[in-house]
Image 1 (tube, rainbow, N blue to C red):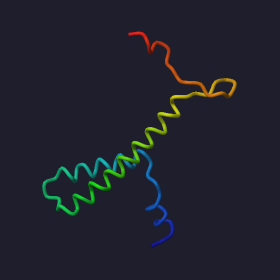
Image 2: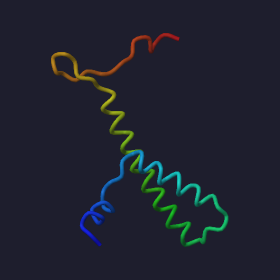
Image 3: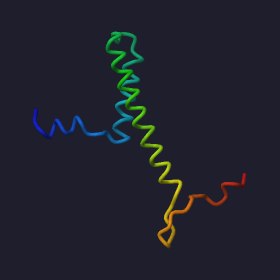
Image 4: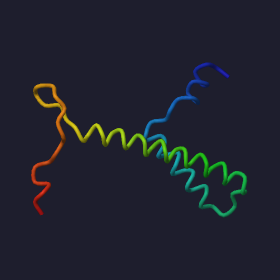
Length: 85
């Protein structure tokens, strides 16, 4: 196997790639003819992808909670009108 393809396999997928793979796994698990051993492997892979997606969303959420003001200082993010409904 070439070095490029080995590093591609070990690379952490993007959020979008992980979600696509997770959706594929869910479709496979919903099929009734998946052997038990394969279903277990797919489930474990799906749980890992789910955790990865969750962590990526948490990281982005934390970044979105703060903005940098004109003085270069972090400040909490809020949208005007959030309290009005």
